Amino acid sequence: MQAEPKPRDEDLDLVALDTHDEFEVASGSPDPRQWAISAGSADEIVGHVADLIADQHTMRVRYLDVALEDTSHVVQRHLLVPVSGVRFAVGAKRVSLGLLDRNDLERLPAYTDFEVSRDYEEAFERAVRQKQADSTDEGKAGVEGRAWEASAGIPLVRRRAPHWAWIMAVILSLIGFLWFQEGRRVQREFEGIVAPAAAAGPTSAPLER
Image 1 (cartoon, rainbow, N blue to C red):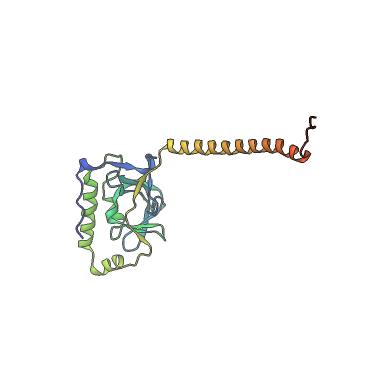
Image 2 (image 1 turned 90 degrees about the vertical axis):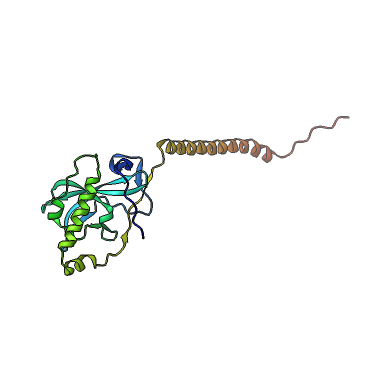
């Protein structure tokens, strides 16, 4: 399958989901926020997914905002990791970085603001290629040959329904409820008039001679 061409920096229109309420993870896609991040052949837990960075053009998550933690689970800094280099395990709620270990991650550029450039992705890919070149065949098989149950693809995103749409839905529901209540009130009034008349029976007017 032909690899998808990388967009130029000026083609990127990225949004962080936690700070853009108008976007959400699409139904059926995994939401890996707060999932643990494992790295290296030992599957060491090195942090967690803090946020998702999505491309508005493709409506797909492009980067993970990874909170890198020390051994005491204290966040040291944030990294931007391309989703093309990770594996999602839905059942375990875990994201694997494969061969990269803690030392490799600490050499990657820190993610300090939202001015995302191609340097992040290229630095990550260089680290992966270098790690693969340095790893033995045995080490590769230990990580890449592992079976990942319920492994999911790249999460998709969608726009939330506008706030006014929810407001209109509530207003229409209220109008429908009030209309129903008014109909019940009119029905009760009609029954209150008809029932006594029916109970009294028919009345006969005197015949004129």
